[in-house]
Figure 1: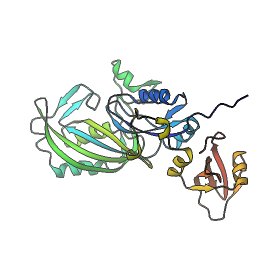
Figure 2: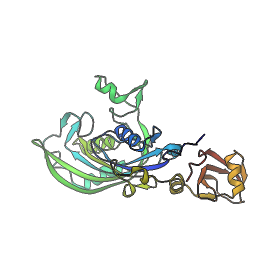
Figure 3: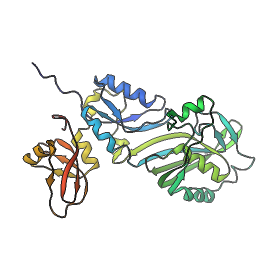
Length: 307
């Protein structure tokens, strides 16, 4: 009986355009690569663009290690106008009092941003994908319910003003702020825009959002979802894992032992933590954890899929 050829396998870095949903792009990738086994390490809203990390084939097992990585965004926050979704796709709910936008100075912007840097308690947007009693918050809002979500701890490691410019939102004076945000996983940039507007007494909403980095993966390495020969753009499991973890270069016998679930003794003084276990051929054995001089894989790649 002939063994079927292995299917596509690796990490795909996509540059999502504005408009389509993340789930649409996953479906497009499945069709383009001819496989159902495609997962993602976090979605983007339809209005947002930028980096999405997809896992294909056995490499989907790596996604769990990328989901919680820090992220970087470039965003435009419009002061003076609030919407019910905290972004440009929602309905207008309030405009700033006369003169409120004009009273916003660079010094006040910096003071408001400074208060939002570091560990903060953030209330997610009511139209987020967080589940409330098993139902997505945004669906409850669409169904006419009032949704109040609990605050959660996030960290804004960097919040930088890049540019500002006066605008008109209809007949309402507004001020657009272009910002760069580096933050922990789970941060809602729409909620950050809302909180910045509240601090300045103007209200605000997000008009543009682009994700430029997830952990050690950057937008410069991403490809458009409709690029030709998408399968050739896959980053191999070993190369992807080595972007995230230090290498443990196994001998042939060590590779066999790790693949069989055995523990290895490692050199004295080796640091504890996660490692990308690589066999002598350069393939990823799996992700291993070193602890107290012992190394054991947390998961192994399926045979023949680690290159």
